[in-house]
Amino acid sequence: MRILQARFHFHADSQHAPIVVGHLVWESDEPAAAPVVRPAAAFLRANWPATTLAKLDYFIQITQPDSFSELRALGTRLWSFVEVTPREVELVPGGSRPDMTPAG
Image (tube, rainbow, N blue to C red):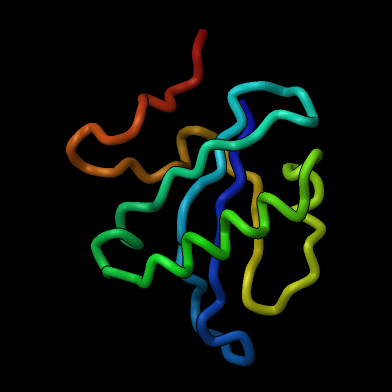
């Protein structure tokens, strides 16, 4: 399993912490596999506009077929994509996300 944390830098020119929009989860290690977008709980609670998630989907589309590598190399001031482990992923309350605990 591979996971990228999608971060939006609302204040691109300042020292403010980025907003974690969600996690892109690849169940397969195949380079051409498509990720599943899992919005972060804090992002959902903050009622950010749906256009933010739409932009995330757009980034996935334009970086295919190897979105995992291409997103990490994407040159934008407002977005960053950082590899994280399943244990670092914030779970959405209410069981709306699958268990992301590593197998084994």
